[in-house]
Image (cartoon, rainbow, N blue to C red; front, top):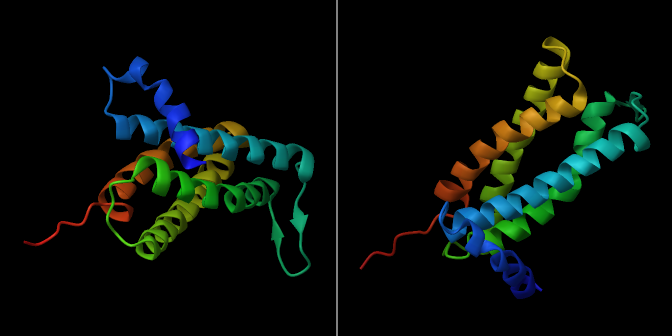
Length: 160
């Protein structure tokens, strides 16, 4: 499956070859796909699953935009790791469990950044939830790219 997915993505690479290396292109496609999935799930959850109402779980209540974020997160975490590991950062020689742990740390950091930015943009700056989520995605994606490249999926130097 990963070979077919990679072949499909790479089919369009010649159009972008002048602008970016293959790995950056794959990151953009995979990250963009996961981001779009995240945004669609967020929008659908916020508007249709939670109907823009506070979600009460008995022991805790969530604003609908935070509940929608949590639903999207649960789905996009595994899809993001799979695409990062098997499509984008294939040259990483770190063990899979190390990659998963580091990816989890990155996603945990991203989780708190998402929460912080959503709260900031919606409650303090008065943005609508969907535009606030889009701006949050842009900021977190930039941080995530650099972290994945230099930490989560880095190529470990082999000593001679």
